[in-house]
Length: 351
Ligand SMILES: NC(=O)c1ccc[n+]([C@@H]2O[C@H](COP(=O)([O-])OP(=O)(O)OC[C@H]3O[C@@H](n4cnc5c(N)ncnc54)[C@H](O)[C@@H]3O)[C@@H](O)[C@H]2O)c1
Image (cartoon, rainbow, N blue to C red):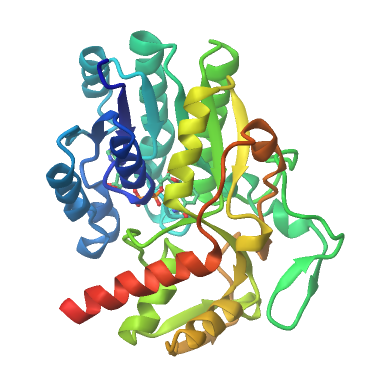
């Protein structure tokens, strides 16, 4: 039997590369699309070029295409030739904070790039399941309207809720330009699911993480804070007393979920995707968890928070688990932290 073919955009990035690794290990052939736009957005420290080299070296079933998702005709030509059975779209300008200084670039990549992929999928492989990595920033700062209470090291929801589900409105709140461009892409994906009855799934990520994140100050919380602790680089906490909470999910668990969606796709469905309550952690708790691992973080506190930043965000995974009961999250918070600490410690030792 011929291997099944997936096309993955952003294949050098955290989620894209995890999806390549996962699908190749499952016997798929994969076409990866990434032109290292990340190094233009974040500078050389944000480049994902090395990851692409590793993927090409490691997997004979991986083919790399250095194409910009903004290149509409290039995307159409690629889809016409490849006609993949599965599309995972992760290429993005991923930073909330950076978007305001590059508004055209942000919208062109996130919204228009997504439209290019959706139309090419519709025209050349319309029955192929399509996973879109949206973001919890589509809810803007609305999660901050939920009453919270303050604990010793974190905030939590005062009404006892497990987390935030998909019923939260995405309307009438502060999104950041990044949130707005992702809303456009998110709604486009839903529309291709509903209007054209295509198997498109929208996954609104919280903190997606892993050792391979090319994290920078403005994007990639957990990996960046661990890197600061490992290298002795100073870290700045922006507001909320360091008690802001995020739930963390490992990139490999995201990749395995997408395969579940491929097998049982639901047109236009939206899911919140994160580590859930058991994988949630605040900055102060992260500092403690690093200390337990022998790492001392050199940090300062700045009272002003990042614009539109969430005070407490924990994904409610009920819908996801109900639709995909056989999907299991394999990475606990401790396992994620151990992996990142190990990988960054090892790379420091060889530097
Ligand atoms: N990592 C997170 O915490 C997180 C949270 C929520 C949502 N998401 C979403 O998940 C997706 C993947 O995130 P990530 O952390 O893997 O990002 P990443 O920055 O690690 O990877 C994105 C990749 O896309 C590539 N890329 C960017 N623009 C491109 C373009 N125009 N053409 C071709 N390639 C391009 C980059 O070079 C990079 O390798 C994004 O859509 C992001 O918005 C991520």
